[in-house]
Structures are given as structure tokens and as C-alpha cells.
Image (cartoon, rainbow, N blue to C red):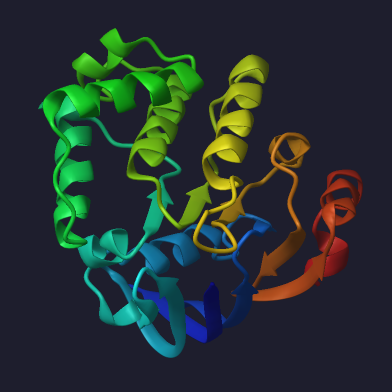
Length: 256
């Protein structure tokens, strides 16, 4: 579903990704772990198309609604319309913009790009209430300005509501567990499973690239593969047991 081949990228002239290759098939969850500064967030920003992150080599392809596409050739909004969702490590606040209106505009913009009819106000509110209930988030919170006055955990849960509404084919989640307490971690983990691990009636399913520092979220979102990213490359790949070993032994043994 997502194929990354020998990807290199730099920020402000400094090389960060140095020949990263990774394949994620439909229906799979892949976790990426690694030390600070390894390039994990850079990878997520490159996939999402964030300005200032310059790709200097390699390729990224994604299976979209109409077949395989060159992800790097698309603008950020085009990547989103093609089915890519990026969950931010630090969701931003947008004062003066209603969260529920923001979500409706985002959902309908994607629907229009796919030639689908926009959701009516009533249909959208029904969908938003369903996804907010899944995340145990009061709908009144979504009537506030985007993320304004939200705790760290509330921002992450609201972002998962957004993912549920947009219903992407491929999600890149950058440290979604950051700022979550034990109860919120379980809620968010269950929501990721419900939204992204359901089988698609017309295909093999969705896929997730989950970036995390810690094993704890993987207790709820069971990965098919765990990768260690260090020095801008994938240096080790294993099953869920690899994350447990990293918790015990740290990254030094595999990142050297």
C-alpha cells in the first residue's frame, strides 16, 4: 500500500533521512521506534508534505482510490484527498475557528475531490457524534475553537475524531500516545483499531504507520511489524517482541 524506496531528505540543508526504505501492505500496522533525532517525525512530515522538508532522493508510492500514485508529486491537500492522514505529535490550536465547522469543511473538501456529494449538516453532525462517542469526547468540546483550551490528551482524542470522520486509507500517526494518561491511552488505542483495522468491503483494508517512543500504546494497537529507525535509516525490523526488548534494553544495542 505504501512503498518507500531509498528516501533521503533534509531540513535547512541538514540531511535527516539517509536512504530509508519501507513497505507497508494493506491491512497492516507498522510501528516505528527510535532514539531522539533519528528522523521519525521528519519521516511523517515528508510523507505529509510539510514545507521545509526537502526530499533529495528516493521515491514514495501509495495505493489510492484510483491506483498507485507518486505521493511526493502531490501537494499536501492532494495527499489527503488520496487517502493519507497525518496525526501530529503536537496538534496546533486555531483560535476563532470552530472545530466542528473545520471538520465538516475538511470532510466535504475531500468528498468533492473524489466526485462525491458533500455531507448535509444533519448527516455530518450524526457522523461527528458517532466518532466523538467512540473517543469519549463530549460534542460540546467540538464546538470550541480548534484545540483551544484542550489538554494534551483531549487534543489527541479530538485528532482521532478527525481521523474517524475523514476515514483515510493510510494513517501516519506521530506519537499519538504523547500526553495521554492510562485511560485515554486505552480509548485512543481502541479507536485506532476500530477506525483503521476494519476490513474494507472493496479491498484488503487500511494501513497504519505508528510512530512512538514507547511500547505502551502497542499493548492496545498490536503491530504486525516493529521497525527501529536510527541515523535516518531502518536498522532493525521484528515483531511485537522487538518493542518489548527495546523497553528493557534501550536503543543502543541496535542503533550502534
